[in-house]
Structure formats: C-alpha cells, structure tokens
Amino acid sequence: MDDVSGLLRPADLSALINALTARGYTVLAPVRQGDALTVAPVAALDQVACGWTADQTAGTYRLRRRDDGRRFATTPAALPWKRVLHPPESHLWAARDTGNGFEMISGPEPPPRQALLGLLPCDLAAIARQDKVFDNGTFADPVYTGRRENALLIAATCAQAGDTCFCATMETGPDVRSPCDIALTELDGDAGWLLEARSGKGADILADLPLSPAPDAAFKQRDAMAETTAATQIRTLPTDTPGLLHRHLDPPHWQAVADRCLSCGNCTNQCPTCFCSNTEDVTSLDGTTAERRRVWDSCFSLDFTYATGRPLRQSAESRYRQWITHKLSTWHDQFGESGCIGCGRCITWCPVGIDITEEAAALAALEDAAAAAHA
Image (tube, rainbow, N blue to C red; front, side, top):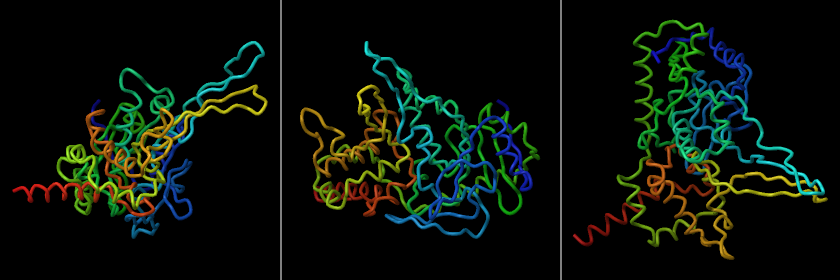
C-alpha cells in the first residue's frame, strides 16, 4: 500500500465520522459521562469529549478541563476498550427442550460493525496482544475474532501522559506503533488533524475525505508530541522484569502486598489485556430452555482455580503473585512479549493504590540488597 496521508482542516473534522457512518460503522469514541471519560457510540463530532482530560494517580481519578480543545489528549479512558471486542458478557447459545431431546434456538450474536476512534497507542497495543490470545493460529475464538474483523481501528498520537502511565518503558507508545487502519494526530492550534492510512481499509476512507497535503512540519510536530509525552512519564519497570519475577516466587514481600490487597479484581477488570473468563449455564425455572454465556472472571476470584474440591490459590498472596507474575513474566513465555502495555489503569483503579511498577522495583531492591550482602 502506498503511503496515504493528509490534513483534515478544523472545518472538515466531521467528515471523518460522516464517512465512517456512511460505511455502516457505529463510531465509538471518548465521551464524558458524569465525572469520567469513557467510551461510547457517537453520531456527531460534538459528542466526542472536547477539552477534557483526567488526572490519574495511585487510587485516584479526577476529571478536569484542559486549556485547549483537544479531543484525544485524555489519558487512558476510565473503562478499557477491550469491552468492545471482548465484552464482559457474551451470549454463546441457547437451547430448548422439545420433549424428545433438545434443539438449538440461538448462537452467538452477529458481530457489530464498529469504528474505534481515538484509541491511545497503549490501548492499540493491548488489542494486538489480545489478537494473539484469541487467535493463536490453531484456535480462533469466534466471538472475539468476529468483532475484531468487523472493527476499524483509528489510533491517536498520545498528547498527555497520566501520572500512572509508563507506555514508553513498555515500548507501546506514546507514538502509534501497533497495527491499525488510521493514525491520527491532533495538531496545534487550527492546523487540524494529520491522518495517515496504515491499512487498505484506512486508505479507502481517507480517499473520501477533503484532505489537503500534509507539510513536513505536521510530521515533525507528531514526533515531537510523542517525545514530549514520553519525557513526562515518571514510572518505569526494572531491567529484566520477567526474570526478576521468575526468581522471586516465595519472598515475604508477597505477604506484605497481600496485607493491602482487597482481592477486588479491579486491576484485572481495568487491564486492557486480561482475558480470563468463566462459562455459565442458566436454565429457565420451568426447565424448558437453557442458555450458555461467557462472563469475565479474574485470577483474584477465590473460585477461579477451584479444582479437586478446593481453590488452588486460597490466599490473597498467591493470587496477587499469580497476576503480576503472569502479566510481567510468564506472558513472555506464552506470547513472546509482556502482557502489560503501560496504561497504568491497574494503579489508578486499585482502591488501596497498589502500584505494579513499585512492586516490581521492590523485588529488584531485595535482589540488589542480597547481592550486596554476598559481595
């Protein structure tokens, strides 16, 4: 595909949403709902959150006004985009008693046609990771893959890092690196949007927009914006975090974390890559119909590892250790990369402010202290 890019001037910004809607897409974008920025369907540009962002620290989320009218400088949305492609609850099938056996009366719902407008680079990287989880070449989950195939991804260069962000250290942003259909950069002042096609579908859409040629200055501003956002991030992970966690499965530090952890599962619900689920069967009161559905679950749930008459991970210590070790270490063994994309949601939405980067750093400090003692 030849490079296709251009400027969409401020007076023409609505043309993008109009073009997506004309192609049958339901457009999802950041919107303000109450005191949070979340993701919801929009039919017009003025429904997209404008001039809002959120200050996020450990255990704290506060909406505030920006000094400009940017729409995608929001810090990570309060709810992860994974809800679009991997819904919290999915209908799998329903069956009816015929008196002589049973018959299937429904299967998975048809996948919707959706355009995800304003994905931050970290959330875009999370989708790339979930692609590996739900389609490994041998097995493809039909609910996820159906939604994924019908989704158009429009990612925005990140213009503001939250206090809990660390995508730079995870190499998932703030620039748009992972595969998408269109990369968008909100330029300063009244310059408009720089749009770059990253797929054939994206190029087809840009061909229908009133774009003007993009000067070199627009691309330089895109790169400078990403560099500035990366430079403001204050969190990082230790070198060789995967090996570090593999070497420290039993230190007392895990109990210190468990003493604070509520095992609420907020971190896994907010994490854009966590994918664990449970299958539930529901039978009608008269016994004539039954439904099977998939619902999100969490490794923090006591019954998540229930087997042989008891949960295998009965302590909060073991459940937190499982989560962080899988996210930052054994995910590499499964999928060849980290399960963390550095969005910081697990830090922001932990009620007691447990910080995944601080816990990894604490283990690194224990290792350094042990090495110094034996030097």
